[in-house]
Length: 344
Image 1 (cartoon, rainbow, N blue to C red):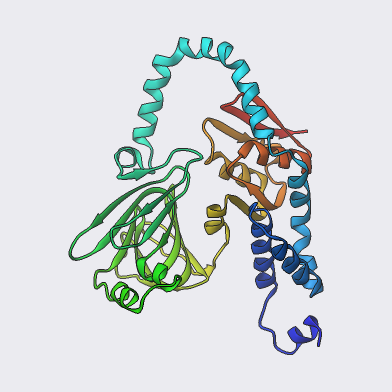
Image 2 (image 1 turned 30 degrees about the horizontal axis):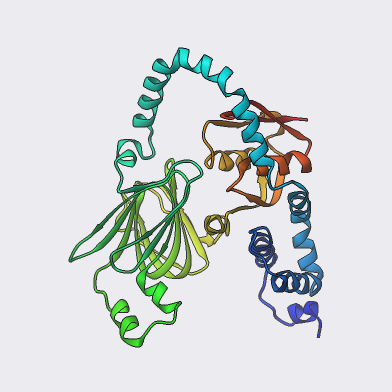
């Protein structure tokens, strides 16, 4: 029986399911950690069904371009920036006092984070990441521009996400996924304290789980990778939504959205890639901007170009080079910290 016959006979996968499989394969192949077995498995998946080939088509351009861009492109760009540094610094010194004052005032007044983010227990800067082992055996992974507080006591385990993006693996989830003694696993599962994650928009109660949470601007996005969570908006504590594995939800302080299939983009950053599926170029540029210092902007004339593929977030210069090779755009650099994507 062919894959197509199997689907006709009741395979519940939808077009969206197949597209999600393609996204997952793209993330794996572009992560830099794919083995020969991974490539063979991907090829088998691709050959198994014409639907797989159609779903993979949007990812071909960027994947092929990524292989052609030298790994050292980011280093070369940085070297050029260093050569310009003396000339740039001469101008910067003239406005340093005013710039520092304005910049600090903007940072303290920023709606996301502000002073609490600067004073957080743990935080990362642009392009940085961190892994935090918590007192109960749980683990936090912090993505770029992230700030969290941790408060564990006798009655609760609380992580406060001030801004940014985290991946949470509770002690129970970690114990279940490793070779752990029965005694240790039982003790972990019986921790009576609730594991809570607060964001500026509301609260998430992790029910022994692995999940990704993003709080930027006025929205929180929670994607559940394992088990389940209960979530509710800050101003609607009675409006609790149960979210199961493979689902995500977006909420503000006032409104809880409708659960949707989880987007891999909210977990794939752990592998060092940004996986996009039909994103507008402006959205891609805005996301890449989170991983670098300074200004990165997209010209409105090309904002609506659609992009699918996987881009390296550990080297945003390389990601921009990939985009410039694959699409009719070019990268204009005034300095290392003032970059624009404009029409070719």
